[in-house]
Length: 259
Length: 249
Image 1 (tube, chains in turn cyan, purple):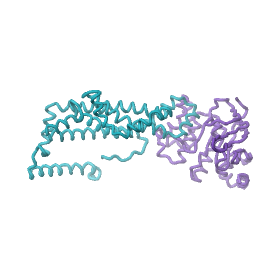
Image 2: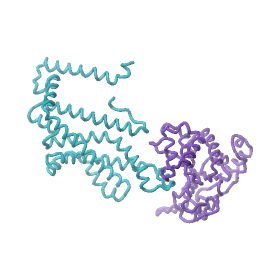
Image 3: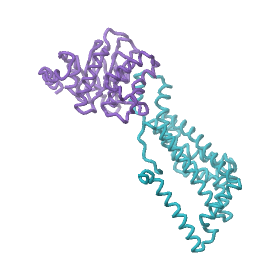
Image 4: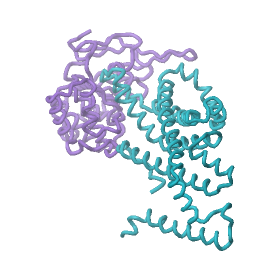
């Protein structure tokens, strides 16, 4: 009974120690040099040292700030542009061709440009995150507003609703639905944007640690940065999923990918 | 313009112009007077413009020419029931039903009590907190009807409201609709493609013909009210159906 209820947690929890033991044995038996692949125990202690040294918190904070600030601004810009495009045909005709051109280019390729323009601080990375996040949000917002049935507007017309009532009672709820279902994807992309920006040019952040590790042949630093990024990514995913489930209580949601 | 009739249509035309093809005449010279409290059905083959006519009465569409006058003048309050229930998915039954009161800022204690009565009348009292996705098609349409009645508009327009439901649910909802109508004394204009439904519900049935959409005949249904199973078994009910089927052709 207990097993069946918690099997989603028990199975991976049993697999992890097995994986770690095999890894440790592999490193010891084949005498893998620790500058190529450290064993899990050694890696663990290096992680502890990283945290007791205090430096790493600063890097985590910088990356988080880039992700959160960039995502928030990116969502705001994406929503506003998307709404205008859905409502005003003229704006859509003016802007859409350029949107498609920029969409087809990998937005990450603009990273060097932003770093030249805005320097090595968090501004350039936040800008990259804004760019990466706002486009999908904008496209989805256009789709969300367009997906509102004509009869919903007819109902509002029958009720002699004012324009702002249509906006607050109909269009905003539909946008929120879209936003919440799209936010998991947006956060994942935001992380990619921030880290790649940092790898190209930064003074701090987990992406900076990745580059530093690779330039100084410090494999432990690389692995630690990767682990920290995974944990942050997982945390953001779980939080956004929790919010989505609470806010979209009225919808049948797809089963979660993780637990 | 106000009128002694609940709705009065004079010389109504609706023409869709098309540069490449000939103009489509959707409605041609529609004249109709509907008395307060009447139950009117509009019936006809698909493409006869019956839904267009209803949308024009509901101000959702503009006629090309002709006039419409309502009893309460230009800002006539009306309820509209669409074929799909158009419920807001994030609102529960109660919230959907009281949505018009929120929009029109009429959430008085009196109106809330009336709304509770309507929900009771429609058999929805136990489902007040249910979400639309948890309801069957028939239930959704009941909510939609209660919503259209919630703000006490004297005129109720219904566009094939039971068209997507199975025959049993439809018969059942027809009887409930008549009960609600008798209690609330609304003027109802009901578009349908079911002859039996039109006969069962209406005081008068407006039969339309297609291309151009015109009123072919107005048939007064002289069956006793309240109507129910007895009505359906009445030989005159069958006669009316046969007669209507004959005109529609």
